[in-house]
Length: 123
View (cartoon, rainbow, N blue to C red):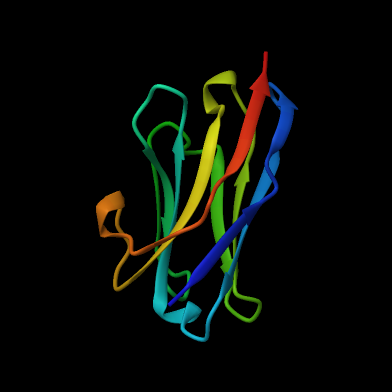
């Protein structure tokens, strides 16, 4: 069982940077691949980024590629998403998720989800 709690969201201006965090409980954190997803009002949930259990493999959604960096600290059971050059279209609820096995961009393969942290980017 993995319990996930996101933080770091807020209201920022276009062009700003933001770092989201995802804190996890449980002793099996290092065995889980992790992902970030986001959902804007009226839209489907969208893949943002994922990272393998020891951080050697990462993947990014096209909408954030080259603007986002995903990382993790297994010693502190925490994952991060650094986002730069934020745009109004990045406004969404951001969720972290965890799964055993390899990374994937498919949300239905993730077993555990946090409650989300809201990011709002003003123009």
